[in-house]
Image (tube, rainbow, N blue to C red; front, side):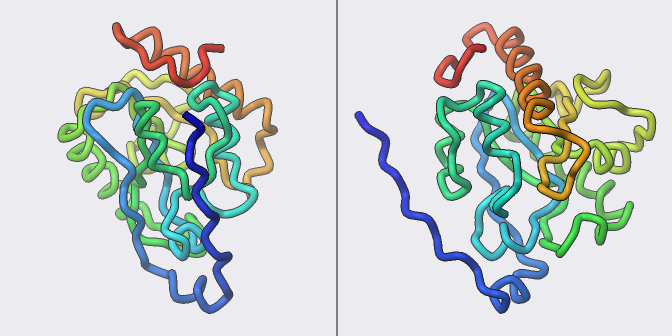
Length: 201
């Protein structure tokens, strides 16, 4: 059956973006996921549209596809389809800001505590933090690097991915593809009944 294509939501206006400060976005989550991706916090574009990683230029959705998690590049407003591929999305901090730099250390560390509670409730196999700087601060691991971490969170393995914001000029599309694919391969290897609805290479 051909998948139903959802219409794109209207592009938010300047007024919409200004009104989105402090808003939250519902988690895209379900029990027993293979991977729960965790962003830093919603940007204004995402908060205005109500969808994760929604700002044009964000590399999250292309990286998911390039890494093998989805069979095509999903649009932000198709995020609920991620659950079909045993993946979900949440954030360390709920409130939307112009930039993640507006968040203070206490907010990020409190976000880690909330994330751990969420992980214990929903039991994903992996938690993937999308942003090394936020991970270093929230988890108090200043020397952490990208990839698999030695600690676990609420029983889940912890993985760190590069920040997919279009403002992050330190990584090219090939870098995101490699980073996301390494997580994909690890999640397949750790699961006795892996989800193969994405791509395996």
